Length: 397
Image (cartoon, rainbow, N blue to C red):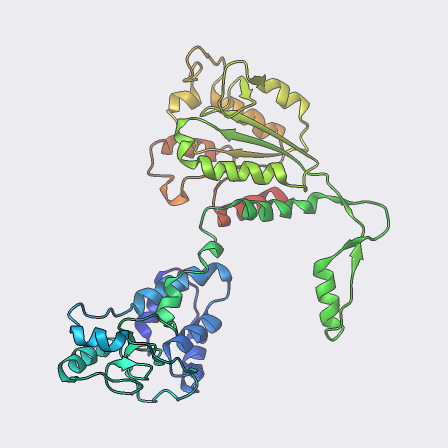
């Protein structure tokens, strides 16, 4: 049953085992789907989906497979008149849904067309004709979750409508980030913080939950010594023209980093395409608004964790050659790749976050420079999943 749906879910990269699918079929046989598409939607998601990050993928697949059926445009005017009059709304549980409602969505449209040909007068609260407040599969303000709404407002949403709203799209791990998601990711770096030798005054939420569960549900608070921020971040951001399309995303990252309370120190500098003799203090990369790159390497110790942000796309001459700097009047004595390697040697922990989708790295303009920089720094896509992997890389021993 629903094997096509099973394969569709798998094609959307949702991990589903045969055991889980058979569990779903067993639950269906026991009537746990409540003989409705909404019930089937809830049951599927409860059994098959193991992470909120996959909720949106599931909704897209569900909406695609059980796509809605629209009301025909040629519905006679008399029907709209009959359906436009007010109807008293009753509780959905007033009358049970018939057990023999149509199983296949395609049949709904054929049934509706047949009723249009047969029906000659207004009808309300029935189980057969097109009307209001009934349990037939046509009409409005009715109580059949598998029906076609013809006019009025949908009072009892279908599963396809629910899936189509994509209420969980922000939970996806392959989407770009907002400020809050950046902050949550940066919070993981607190693991580098050390405990202060003082009284235990900071509530440990995880241990409190564990102890409360072990204590038969009775609240048991657990406190720990407060942490001292020891994390130091050096954030270097590309600010050239090709990064303009990602400016909002990079701005969110900057705001999240600058507002974070988990860092002992945060240094932010900018570069144009590649790092050369100077790093800029503003994203405009104006002449004289800079600091010597050598000064940064000498004065910011190796305990800083290095995060570079950029699309890594440039002409290979900008990366590999002396004098490759494309800014007018700026001549670099050392190739950009050598400067990148200096940062690699100086800082133990470093990552490069790329706003271009990882699947496009080998195909976009600048793919050669992306490949070359990937050999120097661990590179991750600037998405939820990519940032999470990047933070784990910084946390690795």
